[in-house]
Amino acid sequence: MEKPAFLDRDRPDVPDLVVPGGVTPFYLAGQPVRGRLIRLGVLADALLTRHDNPAPVTQLAGKALALVAALASALKFQGSFSLQIKGDGPVSMLVADCTNSGALRFYVRTDSDALENLLATTPNPTDRALLGDGYLALTVDQGAEMERHQGIVDIAGDDLAGMATHYFNTSEQHACQVMLACAMTDAGWRAGGLVLERIAGEGGAQSDAEATSAVDDSTDENLLISPDDASWETATILAATLRDQEVLDDGLSSPHLLNRLFHEQNLHVNQPRALAFGCRCSRARLIDVLERFPEDDLDHMCQDNGTIVMTCEFCNKDFHFPRQSIAVGR
Ligand SMILES: [Zn+2]
Image 1 (cartoon, rainbow, N blue to C red):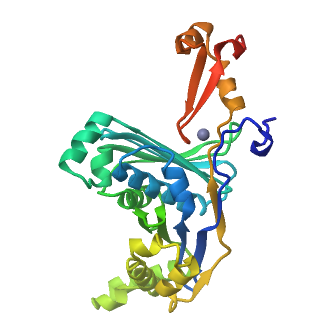
Image 2: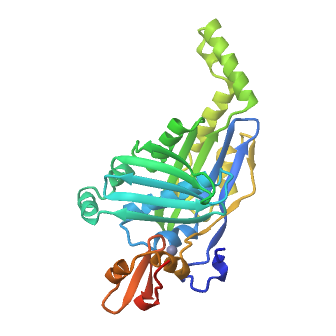
Image 3: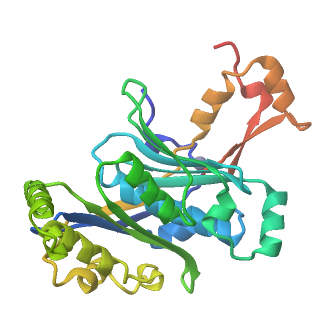
């Protein structure tokens, strides 16, 4: 059995950081609309500043963290939910994941020359310009004994929110609206977002049938809009008024922001959920990895001073292991 993280004394010095109200789920009573408002607060700064990336890349990573937090908190699962984007742009790979308990982590892989060239001509590139063409995958991983669920779509749209919306339009059954924000503020890096989902219900099915008969019987366009369509439409228009600065402002509470948007739509705010600093790396885990390498490879990795350095890509922390301490032959 794996040692729980809190018993592992070899864990690196990472912030033991929990943001209790990181995810605020809500729904609009009597309407086919539910959603989550995501505010990473100080967690955004703690996660993002461990990596030395140019601001546009940090911004993209912050939005990716808000997105996985929003999507993971909508699912029932035990394990991790991950977003992976691979493209031919200067950011060749972006991975962000969130566990069922809200532990977040990320890493990006960049081609520094290509990135420098892009930023020289375009100081504020779109997410698309950073990522290029490629694919976006969402995976639910519930451990070795459970089946992995994965959905993949091509990268489409200019920004990450658009890419996520495209994902939902092509691979899920329901409509979805995604807003993501990340910026450097007076308080440090902040990230957040709002995801609205159109959920299916008895009322929705009935209204669709009515709408279909309206097509047959009448040319009056007003009859084509079902009450469910209208309330979804209204919710998306209201959600679109949410500004980046509001999401990123620690001084505005999540219930306050949701009330501002939906106070006339029968808003019900559910119990908030926590987000946390989520790197699961440890010396023990990395030694485990090293011990699976053949002697030759270990010798090759070994530096002149007799140590092997392993870097956790997620929290950007170096671990030093004396070459002699690695037992081989497992
Ligand atoms: Zn780590």
